[in-house]
Amino acid sequence: MSKKVGIIGGGLGGLAIALLLARKGFNVYLFEKNKQLGGRANFIRDNFYFFDTGPSWLLMDDIFEYFFRILDKDFYRELNLIRLDPIFKIFFEDGEELLLKADINQNEQIFERLERGSFNKFKKHIELMEEAYFSVRDDFIFNEIKFSKFINGKLFKLITKFNPFQSLDSYLRKYFKSEKIIKILEFNSLFLGTSPQSTPAIFGMINYFLFKKGVYYPLGGIYQIVENLFKLGQELGVNMFVNSSVEQILIKNNKAFGILLSNGATFDFDLIVSNADLYHTEMELIQEDRYRSYKQEFWQRLKLSPSAFILYLGLRKEIQNITHHNFYFCDDWQKNFKQIFDYDRLPENPSFYVAVASKVDKDIVPMGHEQFFVLVPIAPNLKIDNEERSYFKEKIYRLIEDKMKIKGFKNLIDFEKIFTPDDFRSYYNAFRGTALGPIHTLHQTLFRPKNKSSKINNLYYVGSYVNPGIGMPMVIASAIITYKKILADLRC
Ligand SMILES: Cc1cc2nc3c(=O)[nH]c(=O)nc-3n(C[C@H](O)[C@H](O)[C@H](O)COP(=O)(O)OP(=O)(O)OC[C@H]3O[C@@H](n4cnc5c(N)ncnc54)[C@H](O)[C@@H]3O)c2cc1C
Image 1 (cartoon, rainbow, N blue to C red):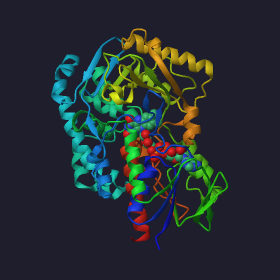
Image 2: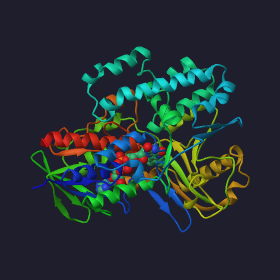
Image 3: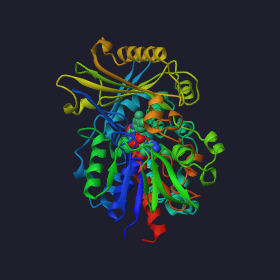
Image 4: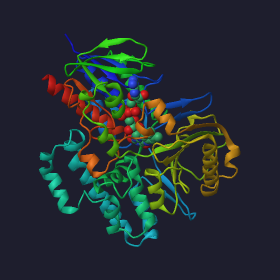
C-alpha cells in the first residue's frame, strides 16, 4: 500500500514536495493554515487591482524547468512567461537615474560613464559568475552540501580564478572604484537577505541571471506559479486543505505518527514533511525538547534576514519614468545596511524597491491605472505602532514623489494596504517576523539546517530554512533535495 504523507504548510516548498511525492505514488495530504496557498508567494485582489504580495523577481528559470521536467511538464508551456527588458531602473539620492537593459552590450555607455574601462571588467565578471553557477548547481543546489564535493574539478578550477568565499563587497572593490557600479552589482545580496559585506562572493552569480540568463515574469502575476502547482496537485490527487493550522506533530518513540490540527482533528501518517518556518516546527509544533534537532542556543545565534515594511498601492494614473523593477538607493549605503539588520527603529534614510508589474501586465489594473508594490527592508522583530506606521509611510511617499519624480504621488493613491513584521509573524508563523529566513552568510550557507530531523526518523523539512536556501528557485530545489532523501531512506 502507498505511504501516507502529511505536509505542513502550503508555501512553494510544501506544494513542490507534495507534487513530487504524489507523482511517485505517495498518498499526500497538505495542510495550510491560511485561506490561500502559496505562503510568502501570495496575492491580494480587490475589485480593481491585483498584487503579488511577496516575490516579484523570477530568476533561475532553469531550476523551475528541471523541477517541472521531473513532473513530465514543460515549465515554459505551463506559464505565460515574458523576459523583461529593461531589467531594472535605479534612482540615486543625488538625482541620477540609470536604466539597465537585458542586452548586456546596451549597458556599455552606463558603465563607461560611471568608470572608464569598467564595461569589460563587468562582462568578465558576468562570465566568471556564469562559470561559478554551473560549478555549484548540480552538487550544491540540487543536492545537500557535502564537503567531499568541494574537491570536484569544476569548483577547484573556479577557486584558481577567484576566492568565492570572500565577501561580495570586497571582491567587487578589487575591480571597480565607482560606488554606483558597486551598488548595481551588489544590491542583489538582499535577495539572499544578506548585506554585501557578509554575502560570499560566489553569490555574485545572481548577476549572471540578471544580466545574461534573464529576468522573467509570468503574465497574470507571480502567483500564476502557485496556481499552476495547485492545478498539478489536483491532477495528481494531492489532498489540499486550507484554513488548517497544524498545532502539534504527534511523536512516539522517535517516530512522528501524525498531526493535530488546531480544530482538534488528528491525522495519522507514515511520514511528515514540514514547510513551516523551522523555528515554528521545531520549537512549537514539536512539544518535547528531546525530539528537537535545534535547541534554544541555536536560535539565539541564528542570523535572520530583515523584515519588510510593504505598501501595496493602486494608483489612478499611469506613471511614466519607471519600469517594472525600480530601486531608490540612498547615499549612505553602509549605514542603511546596518540599520536593516540590527536596529531598534525604522531606518532614517531608507533605500527601497518598487515593483510595478502593471508596466508589462495591463490586465492586473483598470485601464489607465498602475499598481505599486513598495518594499522597504527593515530590521526583523520590530514592533511598529500606528503613529510610526503613518509617519514612515508618509516619508516613503515623499521620497517616491521627489526621487522618482512623480508629482502629487500621494493624491494618486486609490488603494492602500500595509504589511509589517507583525503580519509576517501572524500570517506565516515567521520567526521574529523575518521576511526570508536565515541569511546566506558563508557559515549559514555551508552549515544550513538539514532537510531532515536528526531526532525523528520520518520527519523531513522543506523550504527556505534548509538546503539550499532562500528564494523561490532555491525553495523548489529544497523540495528536490528532500524528495531524494525520502526516496533514498525508503529505498524506492
Ligand atoms: C516580501 C518578499 C519578497 C520576496 N521576493 C522574492 C523574489 O523577488 N524572488 C524570489 O525568488 N523570492 C523572493 N522572496 C522569497 C520567497 O518568496 C520565499 O523564499 C519562498 O516563497 C518561501 O517559500 P517556503 O515554502 O519556504 O515558505 P513559505 O512561503 O513561508 O511557506 C510556508 C507555509 O507554511 C504555512 N504554515 C506555517 N505554520 C503552519 C502551521 N502551523 N500549520 C499549517 N501551515 C503553516 C505558512 O502559512 C506558509 O504558507 C520574497 C519573499 C518575501 C517575503
